[in-house]
Image (cartoon, rainbow, N blue to C red):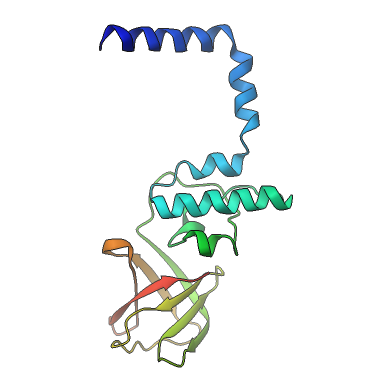
Length: 164
């Protein structure tokens, strides 16, 4: 360590020891919903979490934090419609599972899937025909380059994007 770094660390430590009330006041000044967002690893999910927490604060709604599962696949556009409600898990989720509660095809043949956790996902691959039905258990897996995959019972999979 350099002399400058040692002096800076010593100053920070001395300040924390001499003024413990300031650290507590700073902790109380930051809402838990915003504090929880800092632990999310993915930039897009962390930003969506911050957007949802700020929207909840502005509206005066009580927000008790978010979960990694709730923010899975979220972007700023999706989080403003559905702010999170649970504490954050500290690791990045690789997949989530849910039961299909609603299923429909769009005019262009893409599937829109709504899960029992309230998330809505839209198919991105037009050349893949999945065999999904209401009541099916699906697993959404984080794939490369920020994409997500859902597989049907036969093992065939397609890319999906979270829309809500």
